[in-house]
Length: 235
Image 1: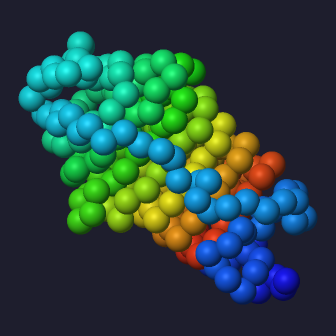
Image 2: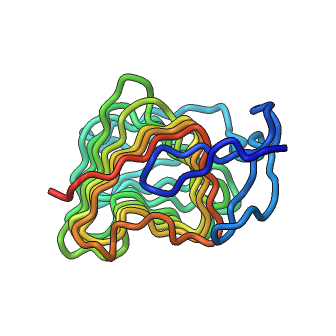
Image 3: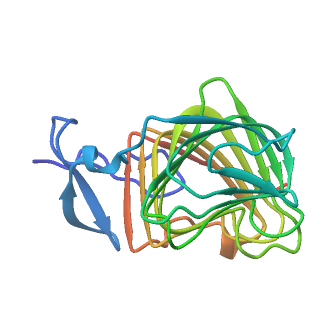
């Protein structure tokens, strides 16, 4: 076996072992090859039910209710979000799989995170549907991140997801997986705050205000394969 190419953030990165790219990829642990994993293990198992949620009309539906400009999701399923919401989304589905499908969704939070998963959630995922533009923007007073997930969070989809953190960090989660995703993150703090990160076949643009907050390579466990990560100046 041979390491084909290994670079460092924020450049384009292909870090994998084996000439057959369908086999296990290497995992990096503090700049050293630590173990091998199968890419199939990175894909979260998801349910098939799709529930449409109109953020603009704020009309409650099955397991998705609105209260004081906050959408509460309390059970498993796929929830397709579209329209604009000046408020928050809180997902509290105990030991269940929840996937948010973003279909030209715009969420602006005046207080707290735009999207929050509680500690009860097990498999959390966000998919930006193809040919869509999706925006998440928090407030100057928010310190919880635009997206906050205490457990594992997966991003996918070829639609654009633009995350703007005015109050601090962009995405805050224990484990982050990006699989065939497109993500643009701007933050006054850290663009991504996580302990473990895997980025597969994805395109990421990151920009942060200060030198100390621009690094996305502080995770204990980092796997990046077939992806492009571009650093830009914070605006």
